[in-house]
Image (cartoon, rainbow, N blue to C red):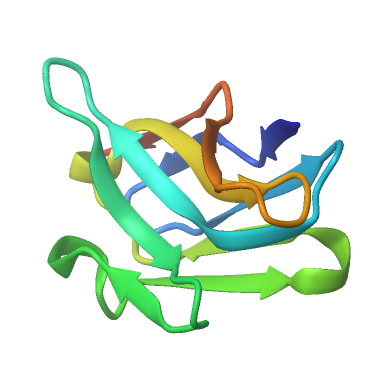
Amino acid sequence: VQLVESGGGLVQSGGSLRLSCTASGRIFSINGMGWYRQAPGKQRELVATFTRGGSTNYADSVKGRFTISRDNAENTVHLHMNSLKPEDTAVYYCNADIVDRISRPAVAYWGKGTLVTVSS
């Protein structure tokens, strides 16, 4: 199983970006999928995720600015980021809990990350 992220880059404060993550490989089901980020010198933190039941969780710091969406047929999630701030600068990682075969437990997978830099 692989998670491949795309869409990072440099943007000015107040701008927008869209990140995408696609899971590929042997996939029976995806229990949850979403985005985390890690800024320099800080711990990795949750940004936005879909739970197994389909509900969403957002970090307080991004509520109202970021929206997570998904395409189940393509095993893809997107993170739409608006009103970006310099403090959103981080490496953004895709995460997914994937079941590769029926009756097997889910395993957490991570992408390699994509850098988002917001200039002031």
